[in-house]
Image 1 (tube, rainbow, N blue to C red):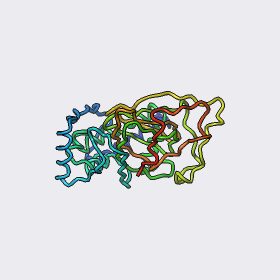
Image 2: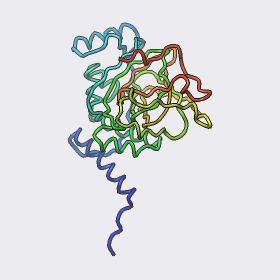
Image 3: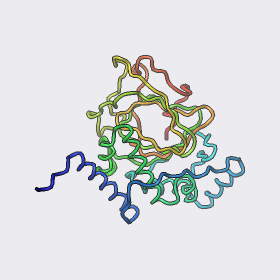
Image 4: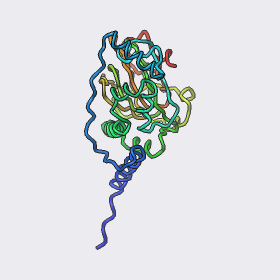
Length: 287
């Protein structure tokens, strides 16, 4: 008897895994398995002022670009965002961070080399989208050369000061966030993501404002925290608000589309209360 044809779902999964291995093989120059050992976080830098200053001076001598306000250890300066306008392939994350903070710092906070970080990043990102039941969106992102929602995504390194909040917002495309230092708190809307099909490809400022005030019943939210060293995901259409607490900022490296669609004022859902320090948002300070 002829062999049975594979089920469509199984065939699609096999194609996605092949696509991911092909991308990774192009990075490291060899075939790899996507099932790798978990990344072991490296020890943190000494947090005293003397060591922090020596660390900063070392990278200045290496002629690496470090924004004067960016402090890897205390991360208590103003909002800083450094973007890289290239497709967010995994090997570029390590190289991007190294170009800003120096190779030794990248090895200290990420992995020993870009090959190891690429494997870790791909595995953890897929796991996060699986948890959010958005693996199909992740697979499409890998197949579509780093685009989502009609937008080209790119890498960014962000320093978020203590005691600051983002507005409640919807994600116009997916995001992957690596918390390098500190913690990022969040208040996330429970339930399926919003549909943004009609807004695909538009600039954020051109998108139709999202109005949650008329949702019946009003949406529910739950609080959480992205811990230091964790890799986290936001699928397209997901809604949340994030903030840093008053005693600790955070340093992030992420892929994103360059902006969020904010939900403010009369468009906020009934009964919603902002988390964190609501008096100072980070939207106005973004650059």
